[in-house]
Picture: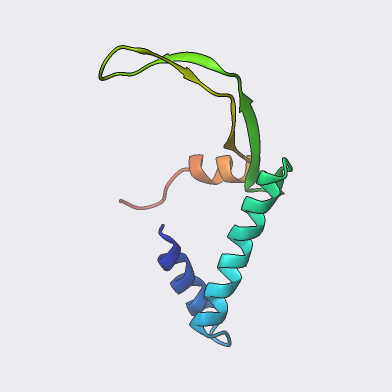
Length: 98
């Protein structure tokens, strides 16, 4: 699902809100998730999953084009771990044909 599709779905489910209000709400949610991760916090949505960061140590990598050794600096990367409710819903038997 793309961001625009999410906005449109929310707009249909909340007819009292304008498209601009829904778009603003979605942008605020994404901004707050990014801000929390940048501060080193984790975000947990019960039944959905957890967003968190992990540190990758500095290492020696290779340039695939030239084969030359390259030092790769350490960095934090975002990760997502699906919650129990999401895993169960994804793995639930499907009814009907696709």
